[in-house]
Amino acid sequence: MSTQDTGSVVSRHGLSQQGIRHYNKAFWNLSPTQLIQCAIKRGEGELSRGGAFLALTGDQTGRSPNDKFIVEDAATRDSIWWGKVNVATTDEAYRRLHAKVTAYMQSRDLFVQDLFAGADPEYRLKVRVVSENAWHALFARNMFIEPGHDQLADFAPDFTVLHAPHLQADPETDGTNSPTFIVVNFSERTILIGGTRYAGEIKKSIFSILNYLLPEKNVLPMHCSANIGAAGDTAIFFGLSGTGKTTLSADPDRRLIGDDEHGWSDKGVFNFEGGCYAKVIRLSQEAEPEIYATTSRFGTILENVVMDPLTGELDLDDSRYTENTRASYPIDFIPNIAAGGQGNQPQNIVMLTADAFGVLPPISKLTPEQAMYHFLSGYTARVAGTERGLGNEPQATFSTCFGAPFMPRHPSVYAKMLGEKMAKTGANCWLVNTGWSGGSYGVGARMKIAHTRAMLKAALEGKLSAVASNKHPQFGLLVPSNCPEVPDEVLDPRQTWADKKAYDQTSRELSRRFEENFKQFESHVTEDVKAAGIYAAA
Image (cartoon, rainbow, N blue to C red; front, side, top):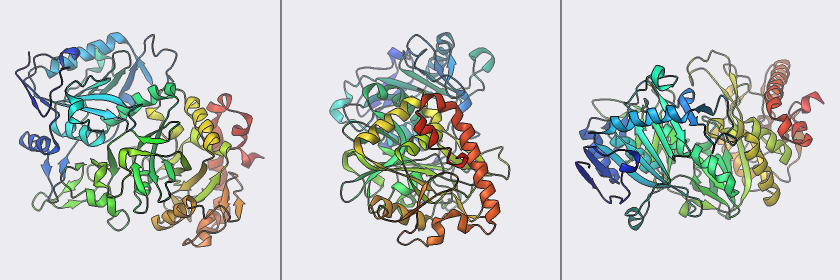
């Protein structure tokens, strides 16, 4: 038996089902204030002058994709997209690690949060997060959806996360690649996380679970943000980290559904989460006022953000710990949100890319076939400073479905669903480049966010529908010739380059990268989709 259980509501379904019986104290479903008090008392972090809680995650300041495993068994053997993204481990290896984690949790204080993942009650998942740290429990509470008081007493989790960030694996005996491990067991409905304090592993693990389960219910899981206009029109924004997915969906003229993870059902779009996890490096109050305001609120968690130890003032421009500084906060910290985290069928789909090569148009309209091509491609580009090991030249990144690390099934499953739902709803699709203009990284400049917002506004309000367009010579994209509040020369990427021959050469090179990457999907798509991406070769 435990020494003590305490909290607002303690579930009748305790921890013994996971083999955790002799813990010291289990703090169940504490409020944010209680969790922050515990975290400070335990030395897990400190408060900034504005009231946000600051936590440092040590060496691990981002996800560990090479340390993620899925147990291969009869249930998963033929349904997982096995390979570099979804790496198999054995049930025996899982059980050794599970025993190690549960033994580690004995005689320790544990913080338990019972939460929902999924705003639509028809498709939501009951999630229990058990952590040794109070601030990680607060992170889970921020990021997922809080059940009602009457739903907690008999809460029986569909999936349990056992989170032991200070426990390190032994690769030689535990079969891991490093001391860090994230292991998913679909049959046991358990996730083991250890060896990393980076909180994003918790939310992304649950996202991966939903990405596996929901297609069987005819729900397309999406790594996207979503919002709703004044006319009730829903828009979704696909994009990898650094493309502006969170920033551009936080629009004062549109209600935010969510900033990162959603499902698209026959009823419409629904948020998986109850919070936001925004990048805050060099965050600007002028450009992103809604997100900036959350960095000075009690209840927000700031990961690896620099603070003056004497004054408590934040320095959001300082990247001494990482470029991947983050803020975790409840979604209602954003002033204009969609009640209930749900929206209608989307009328517009936006695919965001930060093209550091500077050749893609700032906005272009995609045919349904091009939409599937670019969805499967999931292109963006990394630049020096955003990840370790990158040189001075941009690095093309293709992350299928704009979220390959979180997609357990084959990408064609999700792409097929996207095509079917677009055909059924008639949604428009736009490719938006938030990256460079006037040259590649190091020569050109980052696209002005004011221009991007103006182009998006025009697209979502239907103002680009009647505008004449030009076809891009390499990618076949339909580029509008004019847009309100945007200079015409900005719309044509070639015209922004001083060296037009250099533009043509760089554009052809990027086109070849697309073609080479897409070869892996050619056997899974129709000829029309294949042809949508090889315009340059025509």
